[in-house]
Image (cartoon, rainbow, N blue to C red; front, side, top):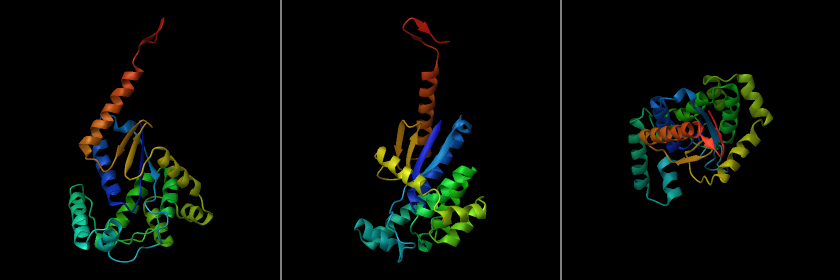
Length: 226
């Protein structure tokens, strides 16, 4: 079973979605036969290297709500994160442009450490208050998560994987993905949002049952498969 997950490393609900999916996958009987790939999705391709100002104030401007309402929104996210062992620290947030981070996630996929790099970048953003658009910070985080420093610097300096990021974003358009996280299972099942682990588990089980049913022996016309 192949699962593609479109998300951004500066999206708190994407972090929640990642954790919920991991919890579901740990309970899935066939979890060792699931291939997971994180796909690129920039919430704001035109974002500056680092956003200035208080997180709640930026949120209030984006959604046209009061700062008090924005703080209540972040408080709900903090509470939800605590339930799945995520320490959201919006007071430390230094979000910014994520294009280079997505390029390194493609490098990480090629090196077999994509999940670790994805986790490190999200924890850096939401818990540690690291500026993931800063070149040296990004190099350090990627190396901490298992990438080779020379590979990271070469990828960043040479512009590698830029087209891979754009291809992911074009594919998101083909799937009509307008918000993240978004999960696509075997190119057939689409799941939007940071769904609870139980919901994700049921979808995995249903898809597995469908695949097994389609692979069962059967007859077609005057021939039968065995």
